[in-house]
Image 1 (tube, one colour):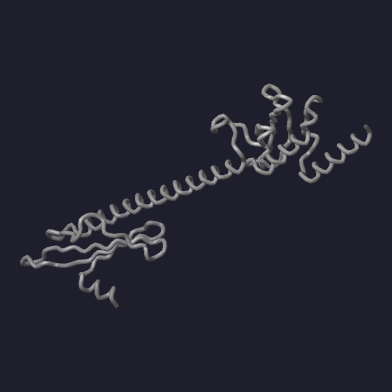
Image 2: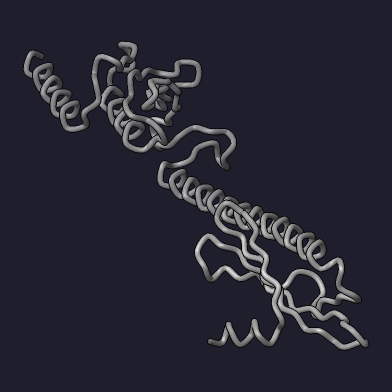
Length: 223
C-alpha cells in the first residue's frame, strides 16, 4: 500500500507542477478522491480558458448535482482586479455548465468562438455609431455654413444655389471639413452674377468663409 500512496503522490506532484494549479485550493470529499486528478484538469482548463480568469483560487465538488459516476465541479476564478467569479464544469464532458446553451453545456472553444463573434459585432456597432456621429457633425457644420453664407449674402438679390441641400463634403485635408457652394445672384439691370463660396472648418470647427466670383475661384483652383 505504501508504494501505491507514493505513486499517487508522485502523479499529483507531476500534474500540479505541469499544470501550475495550486493544490491547496482544491478539495474533494474522501468518497470522491478518485476524481481528484480530474478536478486538477478542470481547474487548469478553467484557468487557461475562462474569460478574465487569472488564477483558480478554489475548486470543489458541487455535491447537490454530482454523483460518484458523474462529478460536477465548481471552480472559483480571480480576475486581474482581484474579483472572484465561479465556473461550473461537467467532470465528464469537461465543458462549462450553462442552461442558456442547447444541451446545458458549452465547450471553451465554442465560448471562444462566440466571444470573438460578439467582439466583432461590438466593433462593427462602434464603427457604425462613429460613422453616424460623424454624419451628424457634418450636418451640423453644413447648417452653420449655410447660415453664415445667408448672413453674408443677405444684401444680394435673388440669390440661388445651383444645387439643393448640402454639397459633397471635402475631407481631402486631414481634420478639416470643406463645403463648396456655387450660387448665382442678380446685379444691376438684371445681370446674372456667378459666385463660389467655400466654407472651411479647422480641427476646432472654427469656420472660415470665402466668397469670390466663380470664374476667378475656378481659375485659382485650377492653378
